[in-house]
Length: 309
Image 1 (cartoon, rainbow, N blue to C red):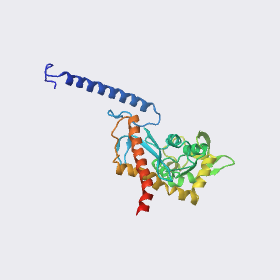
Image 2: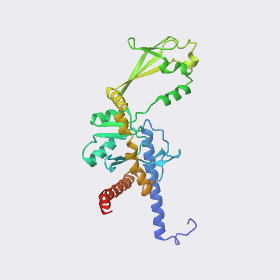
Image 3: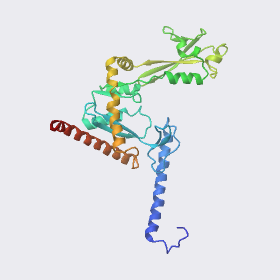
Image 4: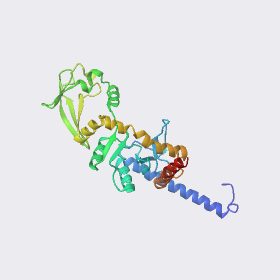
């Protein structure tokens, strides 16, 4: 095309070229704006954006890879398995998405649900407190951080003999006593939604013979944290130990996963055909509405077919 003379290029081709250049510049500009937005977020680790769809985010995939994606959340009624809420997010993590999901449910039904069942990805201290404030009976699997903690301790060179559970807490003096009999005194605390974390640090770790096994990479000495849960968190953990709560949670897969599997298998919606947060939201909404229509047809016609047969 570059070799063609101006006379050979029709006005239509020229306008198409100009439009293509203009649209590419607009996409690059939006991509740069989204990149600045990502960098301004304190906890974000992403350094790339998609030029074709700047509003999406790089997220982990089921096959272990990463790709530009949106996080779709679907809320399902346990009675008839109808979809009562759908929301689209740029966040790859589910932990912060419960409030928006509840807002969508209330927008559809006019009220908050009496009971809400969520998976471990949603079950955080913040969501537990949020559900309690909205008078919702939350059922979920509270994640056990023990495995991740053990991996972190090993990576820091701390041997099992000096793991936190080996330290004795003296509640009266508000201090810890390490396996060597040395004191760890309170150095500070941080208050977060649902918990308060207290940090204790050793006084005489520098000359301790067990330092290579206890805190080899910390020149200031060993630190141990203690968490005090909000009473609402403690009540939730106690509730989830009951057989009734466990029985309700077992129904989550059947209720929550069925619409997702149906939309992917029957509608073939494994990849969005549109771009941009708003358009993707419309596409997801249409898929959910179609699912509900098919569900309604089944519920209406199944009793008639049974009577006819």
